[in-house]
Figure 1 (cartoon, protein in one colour):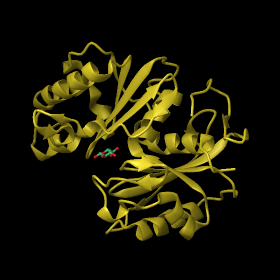
Figure 2 (spheres, helix red, strand yellow):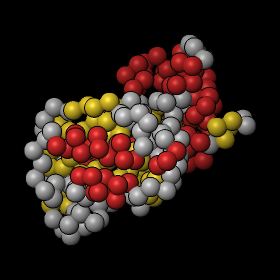
Figure 3 (cartoon, protein in one colour):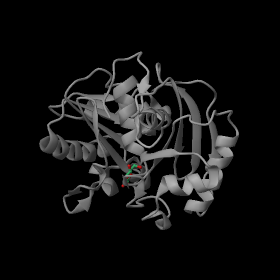
Length: 268
Ligand code: BGC
């Protein structure tokens, strides 16, 4: 899967061009979806959000996804991409860091197909959000190695090299100073420990320094809900890599999933 010139339609593996696709973002509290115009990266209808069922078992989530898809008038064959906060290897969830353990080993597209009769592409949440930033957002047209890091309940990472996504980098789970990095530096850690911006930025500084020493990216994009308050913490970082806030905010997951689905295999 490679980046494309802006304004051109995405092309599926059989060469079919898509100008529309649908993205679904599965999170711990909400399942959100919207149709996406792939030439602009914008929603073509209002996003719908349905609370994530609890427990968020594969079957319960598939039923909610069916409800969400049923609320839109989607022609059969529309590429549908779905994000999930776990390692997704060829459709199979391999981890479940912040979701129900019963997902581990689940073939996500198969479970969704059983309930919805639709073919979907499943992708890690940070990979989807980061990929969207490279197509339409803060890293648009940036050559070289782009690292997108999402700061939320966990720390998600997305590595895109000259437009090609290297999936499942999972850099939130780097062990730094003897601890899982996201335990110390996620936005949830900031809230849990009631850290002020300075204290949290110091943890981010340690985190990003390790990451930049390993990957030497050309650009770091920082996403996640807290990125809308980027002026509170990004200016406190002292890194050799340029760091910018994400541009697409909470649309990124949906947009990236839709874009990846339009390029993905097994859709035609
Ligand atoms: C998970 C990643 C996910 C990130 C953000 C981490 O705990 O391991 O797969 O991308 O959280 O949700």
